[in-house]
Image (cartoon, rainbow, N blue to C red; front, top):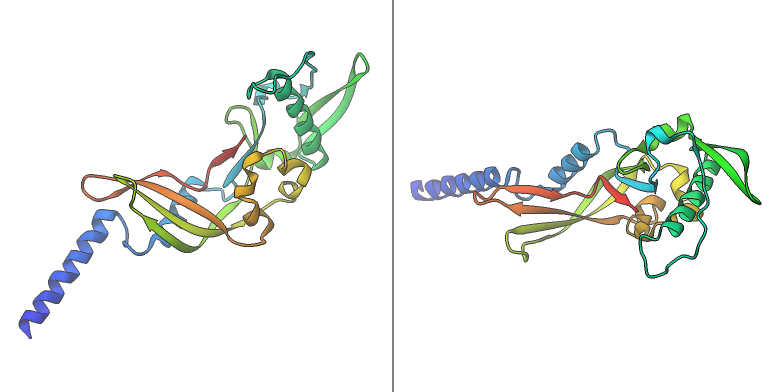
Amino acid sequence: MKTQIKKVLILGSSLLMLSLLTGCDFTDYKTRIQRENDINNPTGNKKSCLRVGKVYEDMYPYTIQYIEGEIDPDDAWDKIAANNELNLKLSLYAKEGLFTEELVGHDGDKPLYRYNLTDEGRKYVDWWGGTNFCFGRVVVEKIIDVDNQLKGMRMVTFTYHLENVPNWIKNKDIYSLYPNYSEIEPAVTGSRPALGSHYYNIKSDGRLKLIRAESGNYLL
């Protein structure tokens, strides 16, 4: 009997040590991942950020411009294409109430519009690399898989839904401009749980260090 008790105590101590080494209950990734998302997104309004363009805070009010020339389809950073897309995004977000839009003149026969953030737009704006609009909070539903196949790394896959989803992200004219939108579409529409992943480095003492979370990503 004493031997059995001793074995149970040893097993319990081993599990406790494993828990300490990994930095959390080894089986309770749901709690850990929820906490990590909330740390990355303390306002609950920054799961994903959609890039508008390279218009910085001190550039507002911003008047659009037109760039003449032909678009190079082989250049992913073509300035003419980027400018055309910026003008389109400003117009679409204005229709959703995130910008004011004022006709201030013409460039030849092309209208020149001036844009400024509205109070509604300021609720969502983020200035990383220009103007971005952010939204959403991840709510973890279920752990799907724990994968240790990558050397020194662990990937935990889970399903989640979103809170704090504004109506403007549901506008097809807007979200169709973002190629990676399909990754979050189920969570935005609420049609089904979305898939997410957290990636960790496994440190020499066995603890996990988060290197990539679901919250805080940018769709360009």
